[in-house]
Length: 186
Ligand SMILES: Cc1cc2nc3c(=O)[nH]c(=O)nc-3n(C[C@H](O)[C@H](O)[C@H](O)COP(=O)(O)O)c2cc1C
Image (cartoon, rainbow, N blue to C red; front, side, top):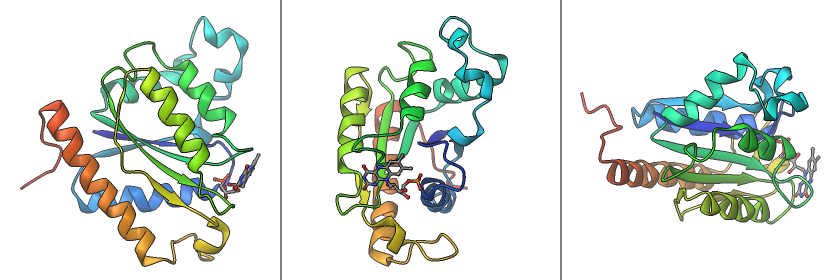
């Protein structure tokens, strides 16, 4: 299973809309995918006591990361970086096994023209530090306000194609690194 991290907890986020496209692409590839939406995190996780003891309601999130064959992180740009909620989520996960040798791939979106290049590169640093296998092909979605239509769908076929190509390449990468088959060939 691939776990997809929706990298913000902002209600109604564009990140969630882009993540929905990614979900559909993996469904077309017949690759099982589990969505971990930071907007769904239990509020108790934000208690300072969580550093020492994680609330029971956080377990499905932590376990999904540990059970995943690979991770897809979709992140927006907040103040030239990735959201604090995403860093906090990372900090709450089990260390070191959550990212150790785990393949990870990144999609970034932003209101600005750089399409979340900064947050994605910062995340690559964090995941490389944690010994993840960082998939090199990233997808950046600039001017996201103009790129999504009123229904929250990507208007640009070329961007959609980039997401598809990334997903296909990432599935290959995960299958080779993990020595498993993710695709249902039946
Ligand atoms: C707290 C906050 C900070 C932001 N900072 C930036 C920024 O530094 N650069 C940028 O291009 N867009 C910035 N934006 C705009 C987001 O990239 C934009 O809202 C986009 O839709 C992705 O965020 P969303 O998933 O919350 O919708 C910011 C938005 C928020 C809520």
